Image 1 (cartoon, protein in one colour):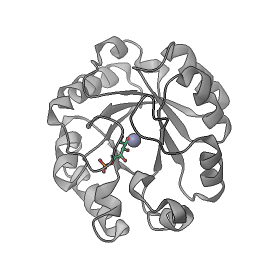
Image 2 (cartoon, helix red, strand yellow):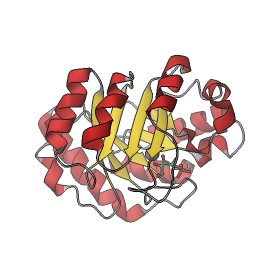
Image 3 (tube, protein in one colour):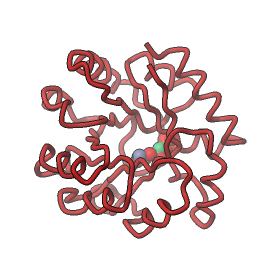
Image 4 (cartoon, rainbow, N blue to C red):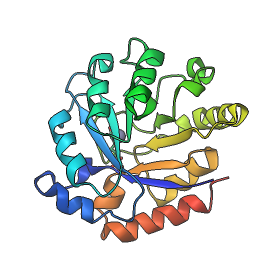
Length: 220
Ligand code: DX5
Ligand code: ZN
């Protein structure tokens, strides 16, 4: 299985994002956290920033919308050229019709669940999505600790994805380190978001290589 590393720019220097993107060029995707201070108690940026990133990023943009009313706002990010747009199950009114709209625009459609949100209701709907994001911390902030009790959701997802025969990516986000990435890969994840362990621990290229090696050793 292919391992994908998606550094989160939440922990990068917001005043020098083009430069920061250059430091993670060996990654597979750039994870972009959009927060509205309603769905989560933190605020980042919106569509205009994503449009600017889209113009300069050498890597595809993986947009993680931690916002209320994604039914209204998510299509704009797809129209801005995002490679993938992931909205939260807890915030969306009609997950399937929103995913279909995102795909019609040309983006990969993703659905995210917070640590306390069960995955069972979505296992029958997996064909409607290109990726599923299992949050491994409460969304809102970087630098938190990996919540290992979320791993059974990945095990269930991996089995359900295998049953579909489709290549649906299983993503984890929050507290990903060299140690926790191995646990998540073992449980079934193939796409790994990492913020502080890429940007706050030395050289990002080196950190990306270490995370990739640790995941590759444990992915099925
Ligand atoms: C948290 C964000 C994450 C965050 C991860 O709500 O969705 O993408 O940047 O940061 P770390 O890797 O530091 O936990
Ligand atoms: Zn995120």
